[in-house]
Structures are given as structure tokens and as C-alpha cells.
Image (cartoon, rainbow, N blue to C red; front, side, top):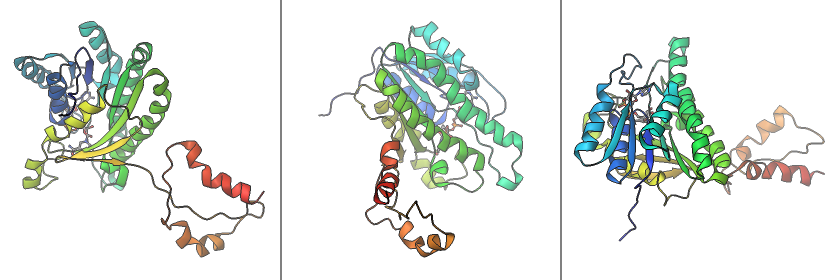
Amino acid sequence: MSEPVRLEDRVVVVTGAGGGLGRAHALLFAAHGAQVVVNDLGGSTFGEGASVSAADRVVQEIRAAGGTAVANHDSVTDGARIVEQALDSFGRVDVLVNNAGILRDKTFHKMDDSDWEQVYQVHVEGAYKVTHAAWPHLRAQNWGRVIFTASTSGIYGNFGQANYSMAKLGLYGLTRTLAIEGRRNGILVNAIAPTGGTRMTEGLIPAQVFERLKPELVSPLVVYLGSEQCQDSGALFEVGGGWVGKVRWERSLGVGFDPREGFTPEQVAQNWARIGDFDGAVHPDDSVQALQQMMENLQRHA
Ligand SMILES: NC(=O)c1ccc[n+]([C@@H]2O[C@H](COP(=O)([O-])OP(=O)(O)OC[C@H]3O[C@@H](n4cnc5c(N)ncnc54)[C@H](O)[C@@H]3O)[C@@H](O)[C@H]2O)c1
């Protein structure tokens, strides 16, 4: 038998939890004993409108199942208010799941400033505001878990999602640095790139597959990442349809030219196959490891 993942006495904020993946995360956290702040502005996928009912419904569901939750209807761009709600209602904040999101899909040549800006505001600025407001509390108590929601669109790119890809991979950069800054204070920070059948993906995923990509099949990873048991930090996971995998960077050994002599575009062309040869590739996990081959090249030609 595996050890139960416990979250009793933990206060968890899930943003955008009025539906889709966030709702499933909130329900599972509550089922594991956490006190949950269910945040949702209640707008459309496009990022328009607002309604209190989305978050309120999820709170009712949690309470009906015997759990503890309160609703919050602020936008993540007013992140401090959401964290205040956690402190006012439950006296602390322990786990933050940055999940709220919208789409403004358009090919880049048709995208206007507001499509770019709105997506940036909700995903990046929103995640920043909520996390920045919670951070001092997590530091002071020397314990915290933060989960950011990235996307395969950011990792691999996706047609018509320049704004969204930028925002989603940006959150992974934020994850990496907050993992470094947070570790000393017991704050672990990870990112997920989920796939789930929600209103965001309805019509984009074939109906039969959509049905099987239940949002509930993402949440077990999120609850684990929010728990005491999880000791990873700075990691990125792809998850969906009952499958979980971990993503890391891979880099070729590359080609070292003599830095004293410099090198020419022609030499780049000549060595192109070796530059992109992944035989014996390395997997740098921090910026010191990332510099290793470069530093060795300098030493080789000292
Ligand atoms: N569904 C997928 O396959 C998929 C894939 C990759 C990434 N994601 C990401 O997962 C997250 C959840 O998406 P979903 O698929 O459940 O979609 P969803 O539309 O069901 O959920 C997003 C929720 O965020 C809320 N929201 C939007 N703007 C907000 C704001 N400013 N403040 C507070 N709440 C706000 C919405 O009201 C909505 O309830 C998003 O960040 C999305 O980009 C989803």
C-alpha cells in the first residue's frame, strides 16, 4: 500500500477553479483534507464577462462532499486580494495552483496588441501577482508549494497560439527561478503542461478523445505536487488521459572552435551536422551545468 497523500490543515488556493481543470484540482485537494480557496472570475474562454456562480458552484460541491472551501471572485490580476481571502478565511496559505487562463487564438499576422496583452495579463501577470502576494507568507513559514500551468503549446509551439505559447513557456522560466529562490525556505515550485477535455479544448480535440481526457485525470499529479511527499522542484510534467511524464532539456555536445581565432559562418555550415548531433547529448539542470561545454572549450584553447 502506498502512503496516503495528506493535506490536512493545508490551505490551498486554486485560481480559475470554477470549471475545467481547476475545478477538478479543487475537489481533489478538498477530498484530501485541504481547505480550499476556489478562485474564479467566471468569464468566457475569450476572457470576457464575469460571474460569481462558477466559483460558488464548486464551493457548494466541495461542501456537499464534506470538505472545506470558500469562493473568491477576483481576477488573478488582482492576486493580492485572492491571497488576502485565504488569510482572512483560513489564516494562512500553503499551496498555490496557478491555473486560471484564457485563449485569444489567431495567426500571428492577424494578432493585435489586445490579443497579445490580454493573454499575457491573465497567464503571466496573473500568476505573478498571486504568487508574489503569497511568497512572503510561504517564506515566513518555511513551507510552500507552487504549481504553474504551462502548456505543450509553449513547449513545442502551436499554430495560432503565439501569445499563449509565449505566456505558457514564460511560466516555466518563472518556475525554474522560483524553484532556485524558494528552496532555502522550503518552497517547492513545479509546472505542469496538462491536456484535458474542457471548454477550452472543446471542438479542438476529436469528440471521442475529448470524452476520455477527463480533467480529473490531471489533478492527482497536481495534488501530489502540492503535498509534503513531493520533494521535486523546478520540474515540468506533461499530464493527461491518465498518463504522466517528466520533461527536461537536452543539448548536443556541440562543436568547440578556438576562441582566440574566432570562427566563420562557413565553419558553422561545415560543422552543422555535428552541432545538431544528439549522440551523447547532455541534460543540463542548472546554469552552471549549462556552461560546462563552453568553459571546457575555453580551457581546451587556453
Ligand atoms: N485543457 C487543456 O487541454 C489545457 C492544455 C494546456 C494548458 N491548459 C491550461 O490549463 C488551465 C485551465 O484550463 P481549462 O482547460 O480548465 O479551461 P477553463 O476555461 O475551463 O478554465 C479556466 C478558468 O480560468 C478562469 N479565469 C479566466 N480568467 C481569469 C482571471 N483573470 N481570474 C480568475 N479566473 C480566471 C475561467 O473563468 C475558467 O473557469 C489554463 O491555464 C489553460 O491554459 C489547459
